[in-house]
Image (cartoon, rainbow, N blue to C red; front, side, top):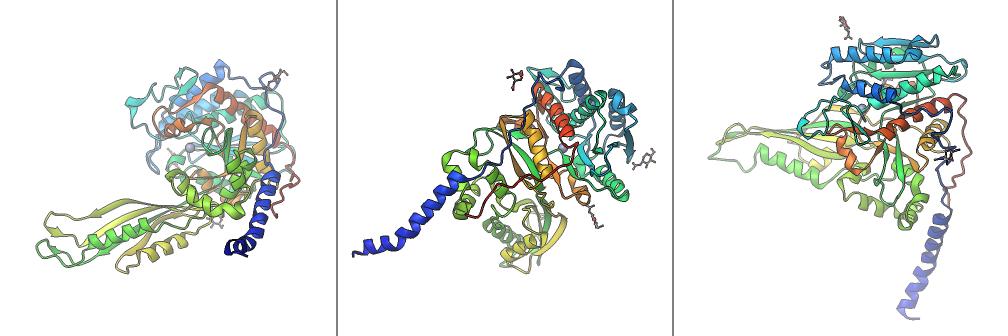
Length: 507
Ligand SMILES: *[C@@H]1O[C@H](CO)[C@@H](O)[C@H](O)[C@H]1NC(C)=O
Ligand SMILES: *[C@@H]1O[C@H](CO)[C@@H](O)[C@H](O)[C@H]1NC(C)=O
Ligand SMILES: *[C@@H]1O[C@H](CO)[C@@H](O)[C@H](O)[C@H]1NC(C)=O
Ligand SMILES: [Zn+2]
């Protein structure tokens, strides 16, 4: 036998095995998508986007409920906005089933009493505040006008997230007006300072609920949207239903060394040492953890809907994970899903042209992957900086959110997924990791089933509208927002049961 033949004998059998496994897994990988009866404009319980309803959203946008920093917002505007909400939904606000509380002066907590005590309550959250408008010149309509133009409504808060507040209120109004008596108790919670950490709004609401011993079946807050042209290899729209949020960690690096006159420098300086530390951080990123967290479930939810090459890889993560990790790490947007990111956001040193700075300080902003702890991230920094002269201090930290269950074994996830697919029948749903933070950080103790999703569509050109110029929602989407919450209210109004799990991932 030639060497080549020998090699083939050794390599050939395992290779054939691998190919067979890959083919079989690709062909048999289960679908996680559901096909519930679609919501249809001809349904008798469809909520049409009438002039009245659109005008109410427009009015909501006109309140300049801006948050500037914790404890500094726009009290008068908030008071006007909550009065407007009270006056706009007469059925909600006069129903004997509904109690309304104002928490921390400006936040709202509604409770809709269900008739069945055995069903744990659900909670829908959103927030009343918005971020400031900084680049006014680029706007196609005045940012607090709620003006309609070419099928869109423009303004701060149209997608973050007065559409959710108003959509939920419209759905509840519609629901109660039809004489519906809910079985499951439902809370609606609207904080007034989410954009600046929610310390005076959501945090106080959460405390109130915890003090009352409330335990929830599920909680749904704002989040990422139904995306189009976002997931590589998937042609359909994908609704991203977030099951966790990255944490954050701010680290201060400082170096103190002998200063002195610029004419007689020592070999090393504080600036030099700190620069080396920063270089080391950039050269040695935090570990790539793609596939160890919910990104895995995300990919698997979409596997059967992907183009063939993607499908082969995602159906066989046992084999392809290293390649996928490498590939995703190449671009900033996907790299952020793979690992704890590291951004050096400040670098301060020096006071005078001819004086050697005795101190240099840098601030590092990390967004922490859900499978890493704060301590692990700090340890990695210290290890790669590898210089005891660099002092490493934690300035601020929020651990990643607990990962909520997803997939067929999670009844709450499935019920939200089906409600999404009723109003977006042409879209897929997948669990996701939210890169930013929401008010949900205050609600962790109330339930382990916390989800984040906003029921509007976003394409690549829309991402910059978020907190940016020309924030807008299409009129069609707003119709779906109202109907999504309405369907969800109906779908959760019964015991949520575990479906059979058909996924067999053991091959
Ligand atoms: C909505 O329902 C009507 C009447 O039942 C049907 O003709 C139409 O195809 C449906 N549309 C969708 C999008 O399902
Ligand atoms: C609420 O308003 C009252 C009266 O204006 C004020 O005394 C109080 O400090 C406010 N409370 C909060 C939490 O802002
Ligand atoms: C959850 O409860 C624990 C124990 O009571 C408490 O220390 C923690 O701060 C709570 N977390 C939140 C987010 O409220
Ligand atoms: Zn928001």
